[in-house]
Length: 609
Image 1 (cartoon, one colour):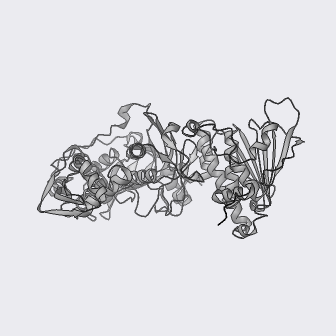
Image 2: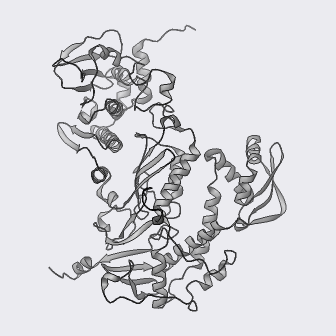
Image 3: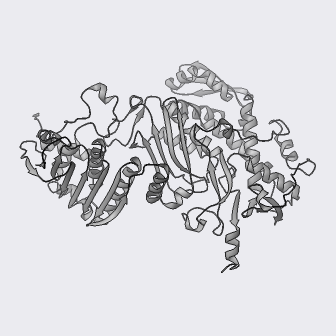
């Protein structure tokens, strides 16, 4: 067998195969170079879906004449110079492979004018990926750089056959540009296809302009149903927008998470977000979000994937906990305000299962660390009985014998509470209440279910976890490394309500399990906890099991349909709902109430027309 050194062009083509599979991949690589050049305005021209032409112009710092050949050579970069730089990468690119790889599968022309140059023109160079000869020629150009890529895969026709139609390929390019525009609000973006302007985004320099860009890219419906959050703790900062639970999709196609400005996918982060929405999102639905995590570059490895679409965190458990805490705090502290949504539900995503004629009340959240801590302290009435007597709890909650103090109803509509005062109990299911801006319909069972669930969670979290000894200890055979992990996590298992011992190299002995989960499969619970410890260095499945049991208890104990409530009982429920966390949805993710403004009522009867 003969061993030979591959020619540079073939090496570059192999490298290109890892990250350049379609025109959109080239656009991504070139835009990242523009970001690193400190550009403030980007213009992208596309012809025939990028297969014929991709031209990207920026107003960045530019490239000096003598460095143009180096820019087209592999492993040549201005972004790192040693291993320490690689461990603190702050730029989007750093390997120095993009231009060389692109030039090996397409005809590439690089034109640039360096910002500090006294010359009145720029310089241009062409490349075929061979890295053997670079003819630098003067060319008219303003400060910045233009990269022109033509005839993609002209020399690799087999790969060209895998490209889709012009419309499809441009759709991928447009998606990439929008995702990149979401990562850099201060940059302006102009996108043209076949010389027609498709996208024009002005720089966004404040929160209002940022939300305008979010609306332009992710839709007005999203921003009108999104909560803004901004947290910073111990060197970690998370800001962005997440959808209210009632605004969701059947697929996870509108989820954008950026780490230090880089769009990535991370299992730990995805798990944290899913966990945060676990008891407020309807089953099978997915939240929408655009979130931005900022942390010390040394705490994240961005060189974990050829396309840089994945990262590795030095402490993934801390990141998971931080993201989960921020989102839980945001969703738990939604405050209902007496202002109505500006868009009717019928104009939102058709997938959102809310009655077509109603608009949800606008929900706002106080989430910045700078605001008063008192804003986060939602107080709820204590349960009348202990958690270990749930049946009695349900029998006493809102029973006719329970004294309820109802404030005197005001004489002026402006003094009405947020959810107003009850007028009637329709069909024994819905509470009809008058508010200062219209009316509200409340699903009695769903509302009471959420109130009860949150109280059960509060009281359960305040006490210790009760253990239920097993009549016969259970032997569990696991892998040796799992047994060692369990042995090192005995205290952690005890906190969850397990009494667990290691009795051999690969055998565990379960003596007790959480009393609340006494009907669950103890062996499977232990295996689930171990799986979580291996993946996330923590266990969230047991908490989910607890919540599932508490949710069932709340559902069974909530007011049943067709039980007619008195006005005092209905008003008591409305007041409790106003101060309950996550009050907009029941435990299954269904809305607890909807609202109709007086203006919408007037339209039904053509008043004022």
